[in-house]
Image (cartoon, rainbow, N blue to C red):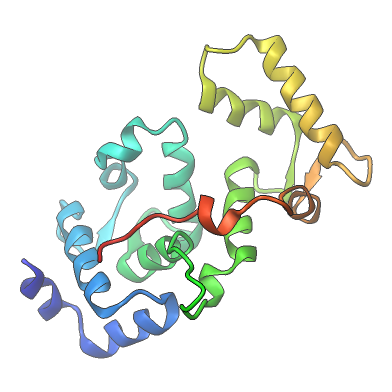
Length: 190
């Protein structure tokens, strides 16, 4: 299976993806194999439906938002392998002895997290957007009043300029003490 994937992935493209994302040669080949297994139409791209066939995304309360992030990278209705890898690179664990790349930086991880909350793409997180994401995460386990209280408290603590919204800079400040590098890391194939 890995051999088939390595044949379809050109060596120069593999090297470019490796340089761009920081994934190892073997990880790229194995992720390519996973990508092609998700590509039910065998046309070299994934649709939203292909992503939603991934069991972990299907059961994740933020699955739709995560899938949406892949399509922000492509600005299209499909995602090719390189775009797929660029998004995954943001979740590549960072190690002290490992070279970080731009896609794997703290800032890129924070941008990705911020976009999860910025539902309308206006570069601000409003109370309504925060409420919507909180609702996705907890469902009906918390009352609307409790959710509203959490949203209000979050905005009041993070909103530095008093516009009742959270900008990216305010989000970065609010996340200052959070170990984003670890919390936004997924152990990939070794």
